[in-house]
Length: 221
Image 1 (tube, rainbow, N blue to C red):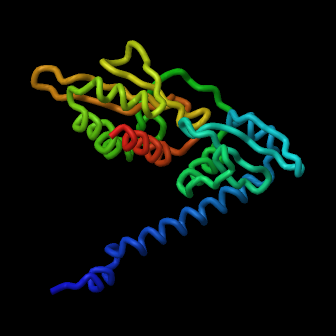
Image 2 (image 1 turned 30 degrees about the vertical axis):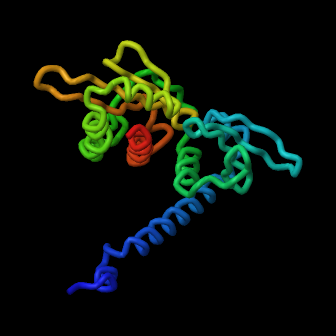
Image 3 (image 1 turned 180 degrees about the vertical axis):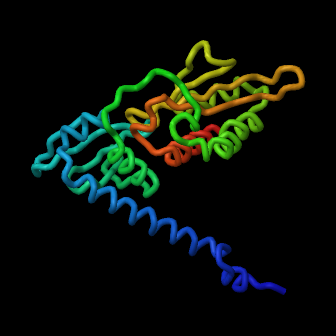
């Protein structure tokens, strides 16, 4: 009989070890992002990333913006990121913010919704559709009112004219997402897809956009 210790000795099956490796990788990535940001001027960085700026009593600055409906503060020049009560955000959220700050170039929003493949995510599109759009359609089926309530509860607002149901969110200051949902019709089941503004690749890489889209789908499920 194979024991738990035997399983944990097999590469890839020790979940605690894998999670620790992932955490360390994120920490290293965050430090790399901070090094790249250290020469940025706070007001210019705020302009590029659509953040507000407050001067602090210690001579530093605080850049303010929302991650979905959570107010966050980026403390310049050391780039510690906290919530509105000055508690540190979780590591995943910190990494997303730092990535966004590194990528942001001030490009205006396009006002046009596109799928992941059109912002550089062709390689990820099929899998992304599976764990976002297809999973949402499987979960909610014809319960469109239940999905509507979930969208509202997660901070989204309705968008008219796109599908049977469409909602928009602002994941980061210049990163809108849109869910389009169609009810089952005849032999066809429900259908859903997660879309991004066509300017999204000016603010996040495609794989990061996929992570953010999945986090939204998980909220709704």
